[in-house]
Every structure is written in C-alpha cells, then in structure tokens.
Length: 288
Image 1 (spheres, one colour):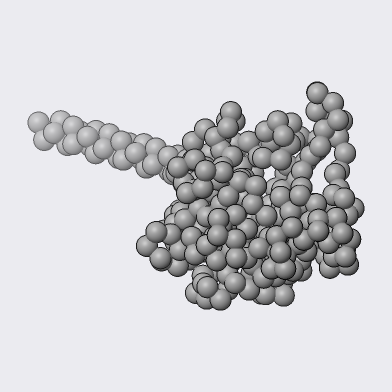
Image 2: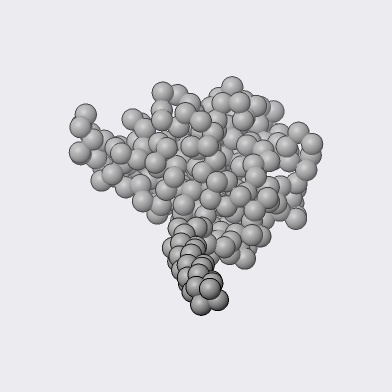
C-alpha cells in the first residue's frame, strides 16, 4: 500500500513538473510576440505636448480654428489618427496641444497680418500656446511649400526681381524673401517660447505629372528657378544658425516614382500612407 501511494505521488510530481515546464515554454514563446520595453527616449517623449505651425499638410477639420483646411477633402486621411501628427502620437505617445496650421499659408508675408495666415504673424504664433496659453514642450514647424508654389524668391539675390514681379502688394512690412521670413519665424518662436524645443521640417516632395497615368513627371521650379530642394537648403541653413534641429521629411520615401501611391491627386499632399512615412521618419529622429 505504501509502495502504491509512493508511485502515485511520484506520478503526480512528474505531471506537475511537466505542466510547469510546458507553462514556462508557453510564456517564453509568448514573450517573443510582446512589445519590447520602452526605450529611455520613448519613455521621455510619452505624454509631452506638441504644437504645429504648418500649412494644409498639417490641418484637419475640427482641429484648426481656421476655415481654410485640407483634410478631409475626398482623401483617405479620413480621421485625425491618419494625419502625420496623429500617427506620430501613436508611435511616440506625444500629445497634441495646438494645431495652429492654415491651408495655403506661407512663411513669407506681413507679420502684422491679423488673419494669422502668415507664419510669422503674432496671431499665429500666439495660437501655438493653445486656448489656455500653455507653452508646448515641442513646436513642429512645417512650411515652405506654399512659398515655393507662390513664387517667393528663396534668397535675397532675387529680391529686386521679386519687387518688380509682385510690386510689394502688402506694403513695406511685407516680407517676400523666404530666407528672411524663415529667419524671422524662428527668431519669434524662440523669443515667444524660450522653454519649448523647436523642430523644423524640410518640405516634402512636390511632384508634377505630365500624363493621366502618373508615369511621367518633372521636377518643378518657380519663376526664379528655385526648386523645393533650394527651399529645403534655406530651412537647414537657417535652422542651424538658430541651433534648431531639422528633420528631413523630404527624405521620408515619397518620390516621383511612387508619388501616385503616396500622395493625393495633386501630387503635393501625402495620403494616409504618405503621412505614415512622415510620422515614421519623425519618430525615428526623435527616438534615436
């Protein structure tokens, strides 16, 4: 009887050990599919606030107080979570404080513009603090495409030609040279938000297709012969002079070869997948 009892206990112990080993194997296998622990950089970003000084690429109806916006407009960016900043929030845990973006906005213009459409206007810069006047932890500057599209001279060497072309329509306070306007923008942001980290973006690719199948294209230039890359060079140089980080979203992966798949029909605004590439590029820089 004792021998039988001993055998039963032994079998139970072996079964228990087998079950324990199986459980350990299951947990080990499951661990391979669990997300990795947050890096120190990711943990530091989570919960921090950001505001955006941008154009239509950064707008979304209901998130900007201007009636000039781009998304949604018959695109697949049909929810704020699909914008570049919505996807960035999902990747990093950053929290949107204020989207002070305006469709069609230029960095150039009259800083006294009461509508806030000009990037350097006091009205626009104040909106970055949100309705409660709280300074954001990070300010993202996304602009320049409309300056290119509206034929602003990229550097002062084209200033005289620009005056002749435009007649300085907004008066003596109007800044029509992009390098001057971008320098003023960064100066005013640093003065208004000394405790905020300011991060500038290069402009995304602009693609001009010459056929309906979007298989033929050319690299556009404005009336002064400047390309989007020339505008991006000014962004980099000016930001460096201010000690401001630049994230190269122009290199996010949107190219003329794949632009039909990654932008809307205009070849300018990223679609949901294009926004994902932007977000991933920005997140990679912030988390590295």
